Length: 596
Image 1: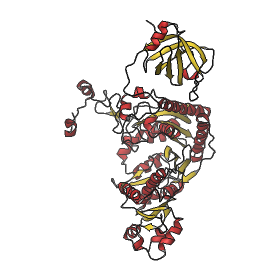
Image 2: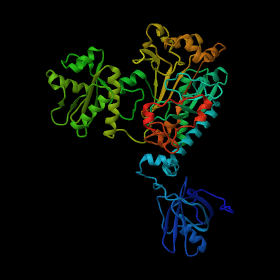
Image 3: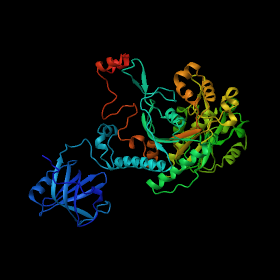
Image 4: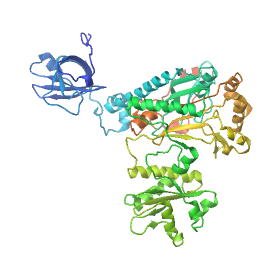
């Protein structure tokens, strides 16, 4: 039996706003109010809620059917819209209701494990287990619609600027790109593996070699790395590459997209050009290469001022060619009590610092944790240099710069949140430029590429490749929004001799270069235009625009911290026959056996 026979939806629930129209709507029951001779049903779809009304004029069979409805039943209803006697100003449809003359129950529902409401305090694990129910909630539906609008705006903008959308392979050769690959065993080529792409990096460069000139893709990417609030094992990026360009061209086209996106999605104007800051400046001032510039509290260098103080913590840091640096939290003494400062000290130790010195100026006289080591007048000199006044708190870290800067950067964000100094609804974009090409890996005692090994060094730095790799700067750039890295890009190396030299500088042997990147190096032998590009994280962009706390809020079916998906219980074991076909044997560890 066709329960929808003769009924076809004419509009969405949230679009019912006019009186005197015959409409057909479909959706889920949000709420039923049975007043005896009157029944009201709130019907919900992705656009909103409309009220269905049944009264003593309603056909008895229809009325009885309405009386049997419960939450989350799926209905279709036909009727005429009338003005509501009790207007609801909080609803878009709050001035009208549908006087129903035909009602179909398309699907009954048992009581859900939690109420489908906009605001919820239900445990996230339970909501993720029943994600299809969680996604019925309006906030999450609006989040997914925002993702759609971002992708739509991207395609509109880049199509209008002569980019061609091209799909690149989802199964590719495993190449090192900074994170661990997800591997796919081959049935045909036993013992060999495909990799899921960490990014379409090599393929989009080969598309430039192919002469496609301007490439765009809403690309799925995969990285087998530990998760956090702004990271998922699979993610989406707006990926682009351009030929015959330099840094300025890529920054300009990206800024145009940012402006187009915000006008299209949020009806906000983003003034151009976007501000820029070098990597070195960002680290010195904010302790991070993705600074949140919506508030101040910048890092200040006290090294020269305290160089002669007989305080071993400061002295040992300076003797090790480190530094003594501070942040000043204005008018924070009432919030950052001694107990709170102790908590910040533990946080600082947890991320690498040996401790945390402080000055808390709450009363008439400042309380300084290292006052006994200061000669007369030195504390006043420090306070003056820092611009510290009564009511302020100074937090100081002394160590090597690789510790001092990121620790103070993290404390700055923590204190900014506690003091509620970070404004909401404000969008601060920032380009970070002039990245170091290499970063030293303490574990391997080798130089690693900070971005990836295909990044072009700045011309004036080429002479340092052999003599002093730490001085080599890259034609690389990141786009940051409110302290979140949205994109990473660069100009690429197109000279095969220089590319091989960069591989060698990273410690790769000729055999490793040939095995991992031989096809790319060979392609450059046939001529390659100068090119570059970037990838903009669509998930992170949606997260920041929506001011969501986690990527899980903007992904339809996300993974949790251990990379599992609670709804479908994946990853899961497979049968022995499937493993035999692939030539794979599972070796159980003692821990795995203990866990079954």
